Length: 127
Image 1 (spheres, rainbow, N blue to C red):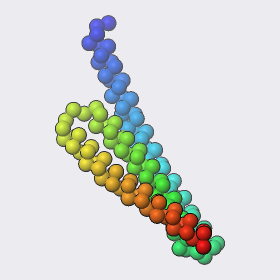
Image 2 (image 1 turned 60 degrees about the vertical axis):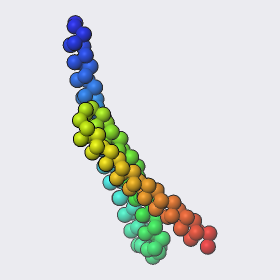
Image 3 (image 1 turned 180 degrees about the vertical axis):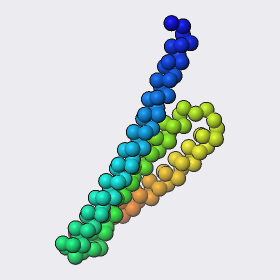
Image 4 (image 1 turned 120 degrees about the vertical axis):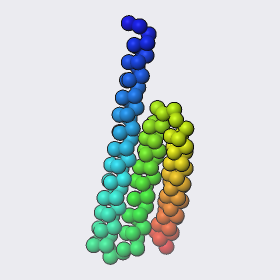
């Protein structure tokens, strides 16, 4: 078997695996965010229905949702990197840089919100 045919076969396998990994990362991001939203809604609704402390329930549900958004964004960044890895066009690299920049800023803001939520929650527990 000539070397050129082997390299074409390997290239096709790599492209298919890359496409599969991108799809898996995007699916996991969707699943994580969906489960986080459902969990946050459950936390909020159970606190409002049973405890009548909507402020605390809102904070706890917001914290749970922030965790899932942060993790989901990380999977989406990974999918974007994998997608762009197979491209050789500068436009794709520029688009990836912009996407990573925006998602990183969102992730940092979510992490800051999580830290503030934790400190507010510990302040409520301490008092």
